[in-house]
Image (cartoon, rainbow, N blue to C red; front, side):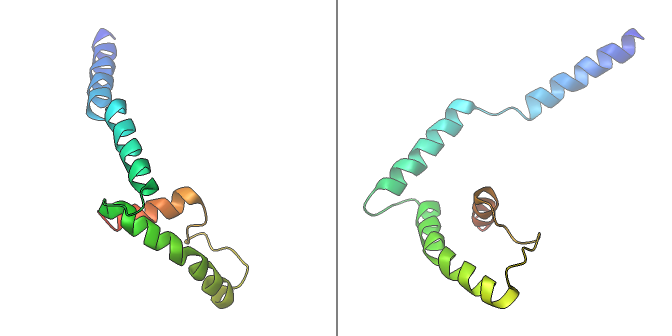
Length: 92
């Protein structure tokens, strides 16, 4: 029984250390993106691409509504989180 408990603790420790992230670094990156987005002419490529994609979002939704109709399809992103995920996948 003690071997099982030690094994579980060991694997949990490995999982926590493997998937940990630096919250400070993430907040700094987020603030960098927000500051760059607020500039007159953004410099970061991800922000420039995001602004272009946001400009085309209304056109995309109009054509999607005309071609598919008002029935929502689950394979398309309709939430902000889904749209941002699709946007960032272009850089992966």
